[in-house]
Length: 182
View (cartoon, one colour):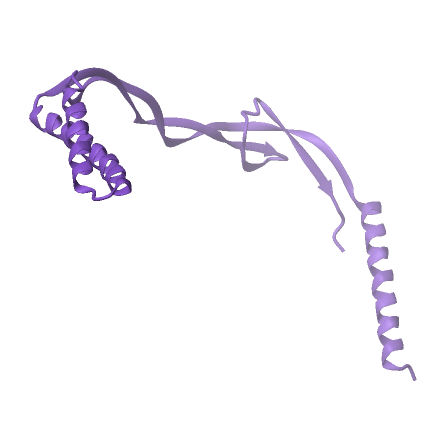
């Protein structure tokens, strides 16, 4: 009596032998050839698709740039520096404090003088510039696209239908495969 592994191996070998036999026998009985069939009808098939076409739309636009008028004179800032330095010097008690007070007072006086002039100058300067603006816009339209041909052809007095990429003309090549039935 065969053990289970021997039985499995025997069944596997028989299955492989049967499969090889079938594969070798079929080509011996099969006959494949090509013939031509008459085209009975060929109709183009269309599909409607929406197509978007981009285009640039441009226009000129006036843009305003606003700034404050700056005075041409530096006199207020210079006077502020001198007055601030003098006040800073007067506040200090010893030589070292007077130096620091003079520097700090001069810097603050300069800044205050400049701010006073800027505050008094309420006049604004407006400058206009023409700038070209563009954007992409899309126009949509429907379009008919050819997707193939529905073809009816006749072979051995029987009609067949198929969709093809191209119009086949008067004839279509067909593959004929003849096999015996067991």
